[in-house]
Amino acid sequence: MRYPFLNLKTVNEPYADELREAACRVLSSGQYIGGCETEDFEHMLAEQTGTQYAVGVSNGLDALRLIFRALILLGRLHEGDGVAVPANTYIASVLAISDSGLTPVFVDADERSMNMDTSRLKTLPAGSIKAVLTVHLYGRPCWDKELADFCHTNGLQVVEDNAQAIGAVAGTDGLNGTRVTGSLGHAAAFSFYPTKNIGALGDAGAVTTSDREIAVTVRALANYGSDTRYHNLYRGFNCRMDPLQAAMLKVKLPHTGEVNGRRRRLAATYNGAITNPLVTGPLTETPDNCVWHQYVILCPERDRLRDYLTDNGVGTDINYPVPVHLQPCYSSYASLDFPVAERLSRNLLCLPISSCTSENDAREISAIINNYGK
Ligand SMILES: *Cc1c(COP(=O)(O)O)cnc(C)c1O
Image 1 (tube, rainbow, N blue to C red):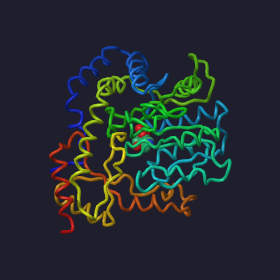
Image 2: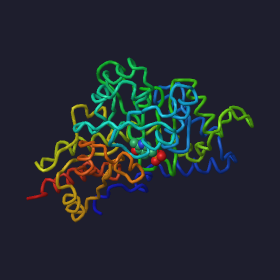
Image 3: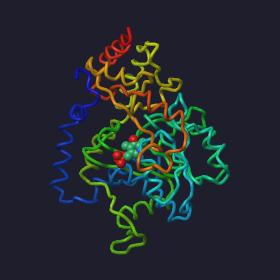
Image 4: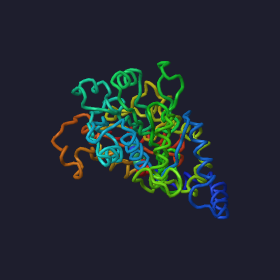
């Protein structure tokens, strides 16, 4: 591929020396679980997010599961409670809800933001949800004053799935000033899966919160439910973050602003250069809020466009081709109708936007797209 969608070796190349050094530091420390690498990383993430606490964990799905389990143990949620979740998200968001014995309540997407259409929350039957899992899909915050007010008025727990939006600034309405995603609700889950804007060299995740009870409970749950050594308060899990991954992330985390800025410039280039009437670009009203985990275009002839781009050396991806309620493992929801999410899944295509792509590449890719159908 002349324009690869993503090459993780290229992404990590600029940090290679520092990453090697950090890996050697862990090797010679003799501390392979817990310890100062993880603690340092947690402090860095909490500070960057503007929260009181960060807990390093094994991956993004576990971060979400630990949050929901903690909310149940703290008596804020109860088995069977409904949790609003967008119909267009990665399946991990929904797995975390159902795995915790809670009930996913799917909410259709907004066609323009491609996030949950939060205006639909008020149309849900009273009492049908006790929590909202807001997913900042593709790096665009799903958060505004109406949503904050709605959750507050109805006493809902608010959990953020921040796997795709590290460092995104939420709200230009003055409500939250310049608070970033990960600090908006009661707790937030991060993923550092290698393809995310800030990726580890394996699986890693984190929970951020300014709620001490949640932080303490999540930390205990992730360590066999143990609050002090060999004293088990909860029937917990083993979901700790590897110090080796914490050391990798300590190198990469300080580059969040720069990585996101680069993606923003690529998005601006695509926004300005793609003019093919067969293709709709993403919402650009608040482009500075978005950290562009994906740059998503819509085209009714998506599969043909994708083949054409492949033939022209442009790597693409589809996040995600099958909405969660139509997955075999959630067949009990298959009769539900989420027309916007379903249409998006048929029409969307993700263009290259990682550090493997230059602004000149983005201009050339745009020109190739503009020639489609001619
Ligand atoms: C990646 C991702 C997750 C899961 O993170 P893992 O670290 O892969 O477990 C959850 N939600 C969303 C929206 C994601 O993109």
